[in-house]
Length: 478
Image (cartoon, rainbow, N blue to C red):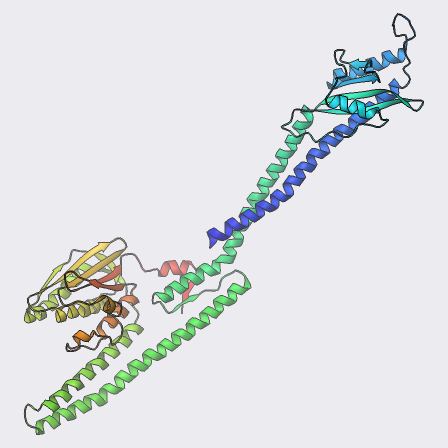
């Protein structure tokens, strides 16, 4: 969620900064050009005032005897020399009254001609279009010279824009630097904001995962974030407390019921034994009653074991899975030999985090099932291996196996295949195994073994339990 929310915030903030920065850059360019235009308007007005009193030459040879013309020409040349701006005063017939430099004349077309003709209508030329830093254009400003209400000449200035474009570019660089700094601050704020908003979500997600994997006592610790998420965390803790309480009540009920029923059942079996002594030896009915009574006693014992397995806390430690598995294989070898089944084990030294007692009980249940359902003369193989972050114990038999539909139900409480109802068992052994493994972060999986049989894989983690990581994320166990 963090990787999705953060880019969205950054894009929105970038759009806001662009929406503010682009108009500001355009306004800066317009202000710079307007300053130049106003300055040129003042210059043209001054030259027009000087040209207003310049009279026509009176010498028939064409020699100008008007000192005002000389003054105007001197001003224009000084203006061009200092500022590099071409300027001139032109009569209505395009002939120059005075101009600088001397080789600059009124062109027949272009911006200068357009401004000149516009000023002939007794008004100053319009402001030129905006010049951007990448455009090598000049600014043309023209003002009419009016004498006795008539336009007698036009003052024209043609200004280079290099310095103005440089100032605009420097201003844009300042704006860009400010935008970049603002963007960095915005990204930092977005990181803090998303972290503040999503921290309770991450803690809640980690706690949910812990509860889903069997650590029912995990709770969401008090953390910052929006009030809505803090309320959600409190509600989640309340829900987890209620769920744990219900589960505890169910376990207590199963354990109490199993314990309370065990005593009267034992007494009932004893009375049946006494009754059997008074009946003829080999009575089938009394033998059937005794078998069913013993089966019921086994079910009650398994129920009590299941309740204890789900309630007990795993004593995790670094254990040699290979040695522990080899020990269980050796313990079950006499039973397998008595049935005519070859039980073999490949158990190299392999360490993992596990509860040795719980893992031994789980392996007992799995090996017991494999030996129980394997026909005489077949093999049961037990193999220990390491696979990345997990250590595995694979028990493979050559029994009848299970169908695909049955594989989806194996491990359910009290479930047994219809083909195996005549084999002793309560249908709780693998459920107990799953509960024992889940308490220590392990798991169990089932799959078919070709050409026939079942492959059961017991997995336990090789890494340390996540209690330290959970505490670092703000999780609490209570």
